[in-house]
Image (cartoon, rainbow, N blue to C red; front, side, top):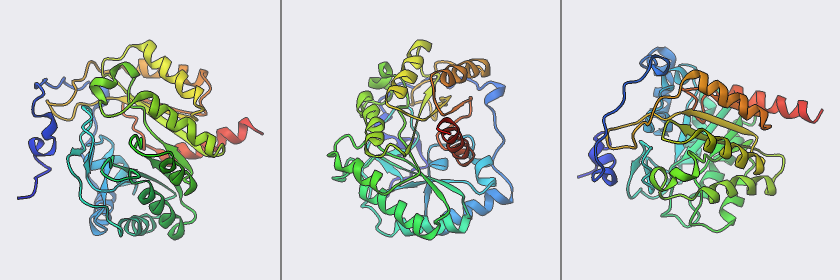
Length: 315
């Protein structure tokens, strides 16, 4: 009998042993309206028609209603089951199915049908595949570029931790406009929050992209409210800038279920404004730091600002 991924116990079997932690009531500044409207329905229908998975749904993004109503969706390729079990993440964990060779074409068709100016393509981790899915990501970029040559493409990649260096090179050679890889949290919380990953490996991924192609925009993000110290967040900013990361996103962590990592506290809008000011001061070309900020939230508008900021810097 197949797993029912709508049931938390089957969606996250690796969290069954974790103690339940009651979810803290959300403050007013983090509340959003339930998804609705014709634009939302039209986007959902296109995703269903092309049998595509979106991180908007799988990760329980609070901005899904706003983004889908505008025809924006973040494609999640290589299946809906991840080989990692990060304690913050709502994407299902387990043994994925084989890669679907027709998926890049379906993504390209959907991007064209939606008429997107900018698309974000992310994926689950695929530690079961020799190259971590790098060739599949590259093929999706190329297929999308062929069908929608005017669309800018942003990829949000896995860390390719168990792959050779050629995996990252394969993705960079496909020439996405933005290469995004999230650090997710401060290094001291990795053993608890992101146990299958390594902070300095992820940081090196971002640095290596710039070495391979200095003209490619790089982007990374973290969540706050997991129990990190303010100074540790500032250190992550410094680490990103040392790796020449152009764009940083900082958003509030929201606990998907009672078995996931607990919310330590809700960061106030004033604290986010302070993080934003600090990040600008450290030299990022683009900064997004709000309670509802997510990696792909307003990605198209932010890409335009990012490009303008670099043009102005080198004018």
